[in-house]
Amino acid sequence: MKKIFVKDLMIPISNYVAVKKTDTLVDVLQALESSRQADQHAHRDAIVVDEDGTFLGKVTMIDIFRALEPNYKKMTGGSGAGTLTNAFVMKAVKEFNLWMEPEQTICQRGSKKTVAEVMHAPQSVEFLHEDDTLEKALNLYVMGVHQPLIVKRGEAVTGVLRFGDIFEVVRTALLRCNIDD
Image 1: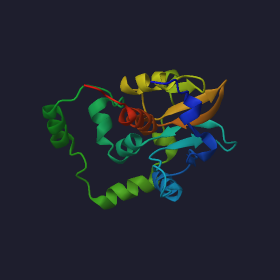
Image 2: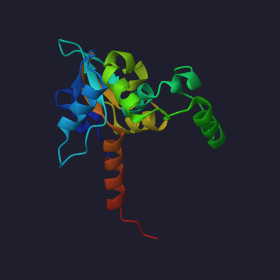
Image 3: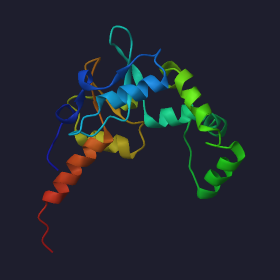
């Protein structure tokens, strides 16, 4: 595959959905909805910034789902990591009554939970530099890094690299291949 750099595919931080720690989950969903553009893949997560616009963390779909169903923390000890089997999942659904509450209860929870309560502060492995290659980013994703990856120039956060955008590059490249049997 030709060498492509993270900076060539990242979404600049100024173009990404940004929320504050004091916003609620409903505020996050409204910000994501407002950012939708018909000609682009919609953002499914947001970056968290302070009052000065400094990057603090991110809120992803999985963070939102875990916040709306607090019984997940009882199952995983809060880490969200582990190996799943069908039997384990079905037992957990029954034992912890996952997603059994009325919709109104879930709505109320979403309107009260703040970004600060659910945001993910990235670990060092979740950061890339603008001059890193897409191969490095792809390897991080395939090995299970929390999405999306955050891009830096020096110590400054400059962008966001989404897994779906990397997939599109690979998909397009493979569809252009001439394969002779």
